[in-house]
Length: 309
Length: 274
Image (cartoon, rainbow over all chains, first blue to last red; front, side):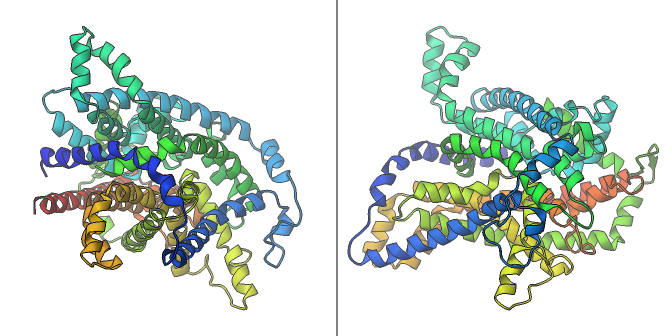
């Protein structure tokens, strides 16, 4: 594998992705119901789509109804598609008995700080890989990409030692620092910056703007979709992260994040209290749902763009 | 710098630690390749490797096929397409651990929804928890539920990038729907397919959160994957972790991931040239 063949294959479809912004605008014209022969198929497609939507949404509904049901009614015989006994105790009891509020704050702190660091690193690194020439650029980028293939579990032992040697064990920084090293974000940023035309930067340079000035006043204003995508992706990944925080915070209940607390304290070896598990899961997923629905346009585009490399 | 400090340096250290006998309560002792020899004789390790392969084979092609199917559907004439797109994508925002426990609950063999439905139909549902094969089936289904949205989004973007004139020209030449798909659309999707194969292989190979929360590798290691095995030997709550041994498992995981990636890249480069 040569670096040039990779970067070549990565560069081309980025332009296609840029062009795709227009296709969304034509969506509306295709929604209309066709007449005649196409009509039967139209109904089949609608029915299939609805069935798929129901299957995809059902687990969400089940989560919701489990979270608001009493324990007895969950284990009662029968289907009970509609909850029979509504309750809020699945939400109140965990907050009273476990430091759930504390976990929430830990999760939030780690997610916000990590996202901020990741954002800065990704923007600068991505910009450097896209627009600056320096020796070893392609090799370095290839190495970076290949780090995406390394699972946490492959390097958890040395990473664990490293964190312990730095005196960070059990500390929020033990999660923040390693998690900030995200190759995927740098890759996404590079793809985005590659699509910015060189002439624009040239023009800024002629106007007397330095590199820093060009980046801040020309490139950044163009990068709002990228910023939104990176922020959301990073926040979501960190918020839901499990494997590494589990290792670092093991046995340290005050330092838990929400996913760790959820698994450690609510899922027993032989029985699980699903009402409370689902209630906490709802607390955990709610901020993500809000963020996702607010930014989904950028988010979906950003993910799709990375797929078109 | 962060990448070097927290990914590359540990990677180097992983190779070194994997040659040591290193327990979490002691300091490392060099034992050469003994960890790897131990792995070669470790039945649970081989089982976990086999499980990972089964899981990967069961999730990657099906997930991509479903994703492509839904993307094709959403790329056709349909009302409320944005709504359907969001719905299919939605499971991705849930934490892997929540998904795992939600899966465990829906597929609970005594009180879960699936078996209750089957029971209402007069069928005795399978033992999702106590039979290994069924536990694996449940994990695969739950994984597909999360994964299909990502495949769909990438394929949808690729489909929208295809010039409609190409398919229209093929239609004028008398090509049927299936023929149009295989000879016009599918070749154009190649970059997206390549990307998805790589991403899906990585995800499937590294599956951890969902499995850990749903089955913890049980029953009897029937759903233990290489990554959950590595975690268990290194950091399990029972007894001192075998850090050296866990690092050896880590090295094997890394080597396999690397082999896959290089192989796929080679193939992709070769196909690009032809």
